Length: 70
Image 1 (cartoon, helix red, strand yellow):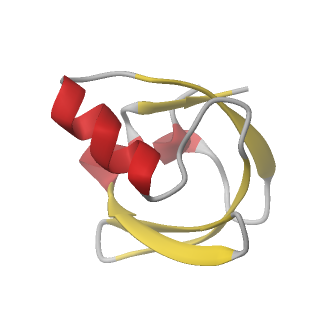
Image 2: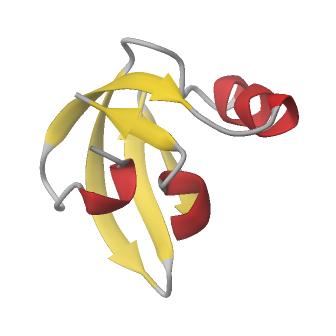
Image 3: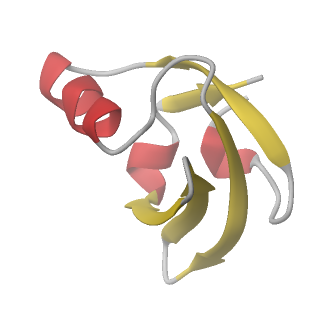
């Protein structure tokens, strides 16, 4: 399921990242790597705010669609 469809408060694990190499590298640099646990905090103004590796990160909904979770 894409991260953009995960409800606020749910904890999920990153299964894979889709997209071009530069997008996968960018998301990897901010903590979105396989098997990383994250929780969705909220969705605001088209951005998804998540807690990953002890840090809050906001990514666009289009970026969140590229993060597949399990």
